[in-house]
Image 1 (cartoon, rainbow, N blue to C red):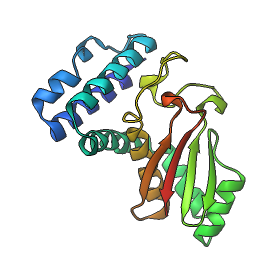
Image 2: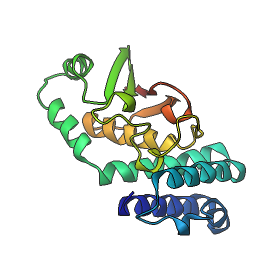
Image 3: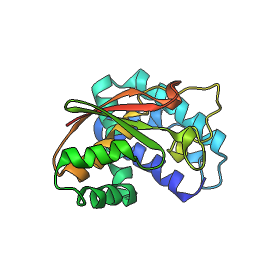
Length: 194
C-alpha cells in the first residue's frame, strides 16, 4: 500500500480529533496502529469499513461529513496534478460555458460530466479508468466486490471535488454526494452547484 496509506489514516485521525475529540478519535481509530506501509489492501479496506461504522455510531452526520470533507481537501492539496491540469484547460477558453462544453465533450480519463442548468454532475468511473479499480482512493482499492462502505466515507471525495471545481472556477462551490461505487453504484456521482 505504501507510506501514503499511513499518512491518509493519520490525516483521518487528526480530523476526527479536531472535530469530535480525543475519546472519539481513540474509538474510531482502534486498530489503525496495525496498518503499515506493507499492509495488504484488503486489510486496509476492512479497517476503513470498520472505522466508518464506528464513526457513524459515535458522531452525528454534519460533524462526520465535515471530518471526511476535510480529508478530501487535504488529499486534493497533496495531489494537485488533476486540479492544475483542469485549471490549465480552463485558461484555454474565454467563457465558463465554453470550458464546460469542452469538458462535457472530452472529459479527463476516469471522469464524465452532465450539465443541467447551473448544476454540473461530476461522475467518477474508476472501473473504466486506464487501470480499472473499485475506488480511486488507495484506502479502498482492496474492498471486495461484494462489500460496501457507507456514503460517509465518500464525503472525502466530496471535499476533493470541491477543491477541484473551486480551483477551476476561482470561487466556492457547493457539492453533494449522490452515488458511490463503494456504496454499490456503478459510478460515483456528485452534484456541483455552479
